[in-house]
Amino acid sequence: MVKINEFADLDIPNEIFPKPDYDVKEDLKIYMRNDPMFYRKAFFPAMDEYSKTKNKKCLNDMVDNGLKNYCSKFGIAHKPEDIISKAELYNLVDEIIRDEQEDIHESYDPKYGHDTNSHVVKQKDDNGKAFWAVYNHEGKIVKTFYSEKSASAYAEKNHNALMKNDIKANEGKSPHKKGTKKYKKHMAAIHAGS
Image 1: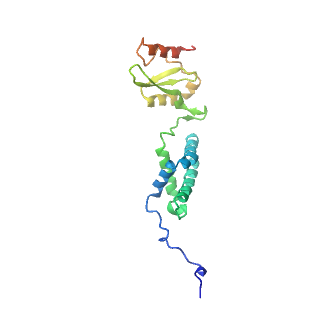
Image 2: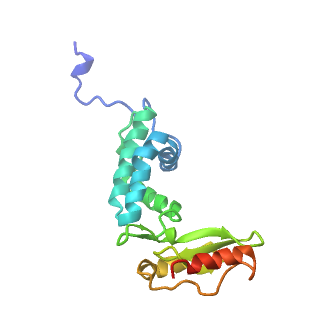
Image 3: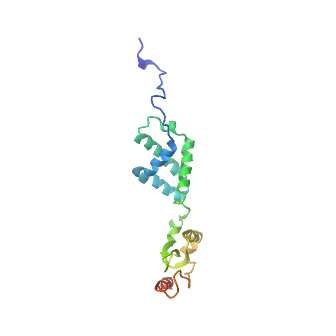
C-alpha cells in the first residue's frame, strides 16, 4: 500500500487555482492608484522621486511591491511572476510615466530645490479674465501672459535669470486697464522696492 504523500511528482493542476481571467496589468494599475495606503506610502513617493531623478528604478521597485500587495490583498494563490511577466511590469511603468507626464513635467529644478512653476501665479484682470504673472526671486512681476502654458514655459526657460534677478520688472506693462485702481496697485507692486 502506498500513501498519497509518497508520490514525488504530484502536481496540483492549474484548474484548482485558475489564473485570473482579466487584464492583471490594468487592474494592478488601478489598485496602485486607488488603494489609499499604497498610494500614500508607495506610489506617490516613487513618483516624486522619479520626477526629481528621472531614474525608473524607484518606479520598478514600487510596481514590484504593488504586485505583491495586490496578490496578498485579493488572495491570489499564484506567484506574482506567474500572473504577469517582467516585460508587462516594465510596460506598466512606462504607462504610469505617460499617464503622469503632466504631473512630472520637467519643471523641477534641483539646483534651486523647487519647481520652476512656483514663479507663475494666476491672477484676474479688470474684466475678470485670468492671466498668469511670472515673478523673479525678489517677488517682482517680470512678465504677464494670458496662457498658463506660455507663462510656465517662460519660467522654465528663464529660471536661472529669474533666480538671479537678471530679468527686470515688467516696466510699464500691466494686464489691467490704465488708470484703474487695479492698474495702479499692479504698477505699485512692480515698482515696490526699486
